[in-house]
Length: 412
Image (cartoon, rainbow, N blue to C red; front, side, top):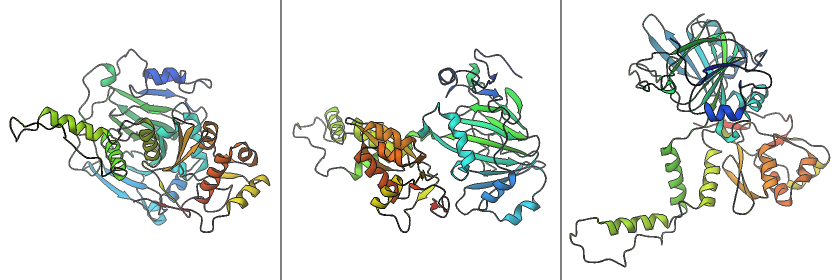
């Protein structure tokens, strides 16, 4: 079944090279191009959560969860979305079902800490850590994803089959779906490679690689997914932004109009004027485009909406408390990023934007925690931005109760 390729498809990691190679080589040779099994990527890995923890999280109103059951005898699949009742899980069969919970990194700090191992990627490209528990035989069927994903085996063993035909120089496999199930399962699947992964092993898959995972025993798998908005999503959102800010005085005009050879023809001159009218919207302006994308990507597929505190502290009170030892922690649902602008930089946080010096934007985007010394190192504009973020709920005192679903509501 397995055939050689110009690039190894499985590799052993070392403590110095958790990807089994330098990150730059991985990005050059594998990222978005070809799959890679990395044995022992997380040596001695022990899952920071238990299946019971995941089941408890799936009962939360704000958590995004699904329960998938496969009737192998009739090849029927059922899918239910949470929240679930705790009483449901003890009665589940001992085989052929899977519980999946999205955005577990937003709920559990130990899961979130795993993302530090993926700093070779732009942080704004990383979406979430989905955790799945599967009973023996549990699976979600053969499918494809439209984004890059790292599948880290956290507990137990899972058998993975993939079809790497495209990266082997063969014809890309078909990706049409079955019509008899709710899930987007592949109509046909012919694997080229098969492995059993144990704790600490990790499988990287670029978009559109058919794959199928099957639990050998009760197991947990962590899926580190990435944000990959479609071209339609990008253009749709950007056009909405352009329309909202468009000047009604900017219109199609034809002061150079000449008598047409055929009054029903839309000629080349007319189309040139259409392009001119569209260009008047400054669609290619780098700062305007960059500001839109920063807002867009820091809200795309957001886990939930962060609400300001019921009684926000006065900015001067926060500033004084920081000088007296207060430590702030960023809300786990906040999504920061920054970009260089024509002058200085722009900091983005979950759709908000702030003009800042580069060093402030860089510091605030990276800061999970901030203390008095961090605050003192900011410029006046940086301090004002931080206080605005505190007032909006994006930073809260360290270990303050209500860091999760009590302060934020999941979006529909």
